[in-house]
Image (cartoon, rainbow over all chains, first blue to last red):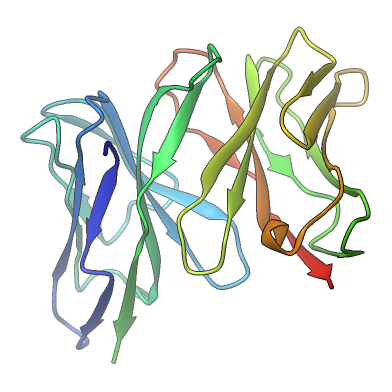
Length: 116
Length: 113
């Protein structure tokens, strides 16, 4: 089945450590996104990538880094510079919806990061 | 600036009743508006979209209404079921552009059995 796979689902990190969250898609979508979600809140865009080897900062890019070496993969690194990294991280790719001309996001199941 | 926001953060409805979830937007240039459903602990899922040149679109048990005059979007769920309990987000989509997708804060729908 086509979709987005995020790993790990749960991750614990000590302060001062960098962690990398994996995101893989087999939908053949060009565009991929990373969002952060805090409890009871909406989605805030961290980074997005339109094409391989290109990515753009979103609204809250500070303390995060990404790479896009392959079309299928868009890993997110949460660095020690991110002051409040505990959150639910969602990866998505963007493509045409069935029966619609709209480009919609397909999300992964998320990665929950907790800083101890 | 651009924003998509929801009027009500929480909504409780009796099972079998109809639900109406509202959304206000400020960017009139959007080509599409999209509704997503997020169940607890999961990623959001696409429900339905509506083009900016339409007033109404129906899906299975869901209807989306767009009022461009007052920049208002709503999602109606008919005969609400326990499985409809989730957070619902509206989002703006600028056609094929790869611009960032803007989400509202979400409305939490609880269905009372």
